[in-house]
Image (cartoon, rainbow, N blue to C red):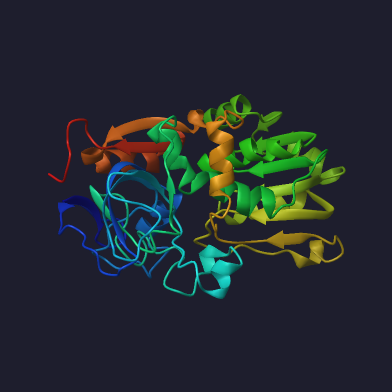
Amino acid sequence: MRALVYHGPGRTSWDRVADPAIECPTDAILRVDTTTICGTDLHILRGDLPEVEPGTVLGHEAVGEVLEVGREVHSISPGERVIVSAVSACGHCASCRDSSYGQCHGGGGWILGNLINGTQAELVPVPHADHSTHRWPGTLSPQDAVLLSEVLPTAYEVGVRNGQVGPGDTVAVVGAGPVGLAAVITARIYSPRRVIAVDLSPARLEAAAQLGADAAELPGSLIAELAEGPGADVVIEAAGGPDSFVLCTRVVRSGGHIANIGTHGRSATLHLEALWRKNVTISTGQVDTFSTPWLLDLVTSGSLRISQLVTHTFSLDRMEDAYEVFSHGTETGALKVVLHRARGTDGPR
């Protein structure tokens, strides 16, 4: 098969590699119909995640057809189409029993495209397949379905839920990339009074306004108004930069919440001299994807509309072109970049 192989910081190639095989009886093998690129993949390429070894196939989001299952896989069968969770769950350890799948101690957690070969390939191995896949409804487009692998659950769980968004809240989302925009969408579930998106890209601010933000602006007068006035009840950090984190600490109200989603490749300063008396709660975390079935129901029912998050589509064999477009998103206007298996191809080339 062919796959995108990581060769160290700044270097990847679309290579021919060995097909995956069932290694554990709880594994499945999937033919990838649709996959996508995550901001975390860019962090890997920048060398921010040194635990990812050269030779690893990148990617952790996919939908596709089950080709083969191990003898202890009971919930899915060959021929079914499924959504692959970005987080693998053994389903049996204490963390999994608490729905903290990202902290799985049974060989799960975020391993696809990190510790084992991932989804940016024609075929992908899916460990702990019973607990790490969801049936893909036939009514849902593949480009919507793949957003349930990670981006939507991340925005909801790590941003909206950890931030405790509630009715009547003022919510500020700092960073209007794919996850930040998904936070704008999912925050609306709880009827906040106002959702404000902040970014440096006019195109992303326009997208935020179209997706339900009440205000979408460059950092400036609106942020100053929040910082000097009542502040935001919930601030969701979705940019992953030192400056964006400091901005969040400026605009949160006393007693408010800062929910950090962004992947930070550099240190961020925590100004306790300004925060110690504000009774602020700061949460961090990795997505668990426990919310995927519920979010899937909301999307299939039409209660959440997410299609606008996808701005560019490519065939799978144009993976390197897709990375070029996605990595320059502020110039190209790329939000979520999706790659599909070419029509008429039933297996690896």
